[in-house]
Length: 176
Image (tube, rainbow, N blue to C red; front, side, top):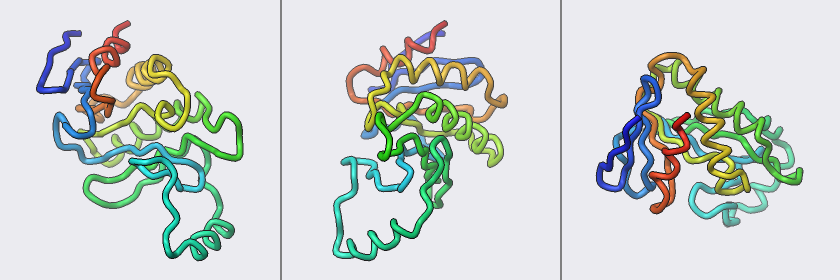
């Protein structure tokens, strides 16, 4: 597998999948769906962590009390362009809030959803590494395993959303 720079993107092939690692500010290609690291109550904000309370805070608390939490490891599909794939890998009622098995299950679900919907370009942060302490090497090992079992051709392009520094090192973890 050969790496090459494309602006700030670093690209590798893993089987039939073209995997690019680049920061959120510089997508290497347009995506049809973007995975988002989420918790069971869907309170994580994609940019800052936990959402700030709004003027609707009392209504939000009432909704949370009556809502059933999402199952850890599940992926919820939300509309928009690109589609939002809410990967539930945290349960803040537990310590630690994440589990390797939840990340692995969510990854497999993301690829099943992509195959079922014919999504060929998906954006994916390193789940469990931003709001949890799952190390990037462990995530990449899970990704390598999941890509090896994923249905052929879906997605054809995978954008790993990574910090500005370290994109090349992340992709090196795809090598056997």
